[in-house]
Image (tube, rainbow, N blue to C red; front, side, top):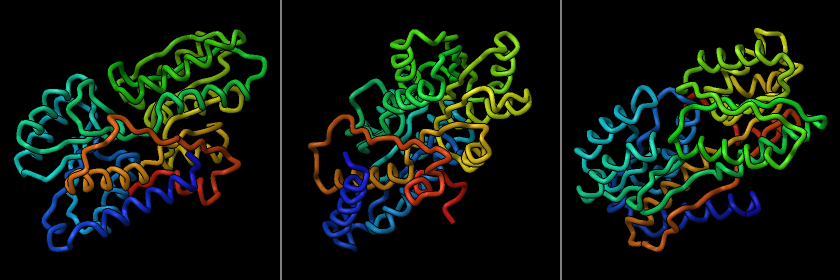
Length: 319
């Protein structure tokens, strides 16, 4: 869908949501947003969208999240949220399998649940909303192919298996690269979402493969670690780095040339759309698609400071 049209559609959804709910009734409704974890600009930016849409709709939004990306800790947070009996829960699931039972508990408590960003391998959520992760991986590969016409060795710096979003980014990248015989794919190395481990992985790969041509880092943390390792090795101008997510730190690395491109998920837009879906569900809508995906946005030095580029960047706070 055309990006301008998509934004108009999103705005119309929120406007309709506001018009269709009597203020006295809407104010009693609680939409609970459970982050993947706190302290991450992606989730902060999504939170900003949730709060913005909730305020416009006249509903109350609560925000919760564990201190780190961990299914067990997110389960504990979710159980606490269930006890507060919100009208609907929006959750970014930290594990596609481990979070099935906790989300089932919410459903059994009579609380409708939708997933955003990361899904589970079950039909419990009434809908799932995310950026098209597979397409984002393809976009990263296309950028790499265009920047490296002679080919070369490529590395993927991952988080860990079992996370629906990063798995799909990796798969999209691998599918596109597999079609191009000029590249030697060194595979994926996982980092448990630890920036220091990501930097260590890149440093070790550079020692083993000094002719490394390109890196795809699948999320904010891995991209920050990879960028730090390239700077430390003094090869930021020789190795193409494409990262997923667009934190302020990563935007600065894009600006100084350490990173060649960033794939943004437009999390603020996702937060707005998630609240629109949540309130529509409470109003009686049931014909949601099980999965709905929006186009990612690729940031480069050419569009970083454009209005659309600025809107796609993440923020550290909602102030």
